[in-house]
Length: 102
Image (cartoon, rainbow, N blue to C red; front, side, top):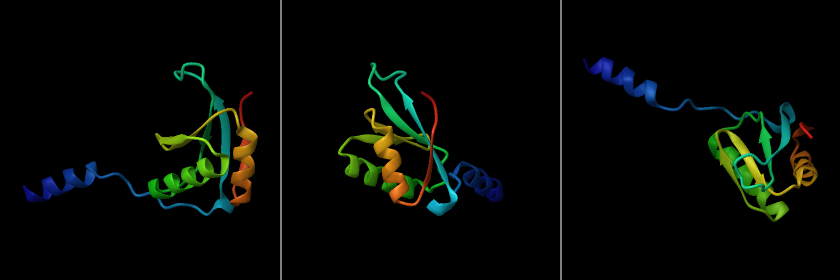
């Protein structure tokens, strides 16, 4: 019985993601306005980072660009229509970037 409980607890734990180095990743940057009252955000997709590293990267970008943002559902959202500036900051940190969408 105890073994079954342990297996159930293990199934509920989130999987730990190991962060890849920036040189091995391509960040896709898109604009998004849906569900935001017409306000534009830049969404950074397809990064393989632990939650801790994702939050640290978001904080660096927000500080460098002087804007707000959040980490939601494994994506980084940066407020404003500043996709080129976000791409430049990511490239300085060693990430390859790809601008997706209009």
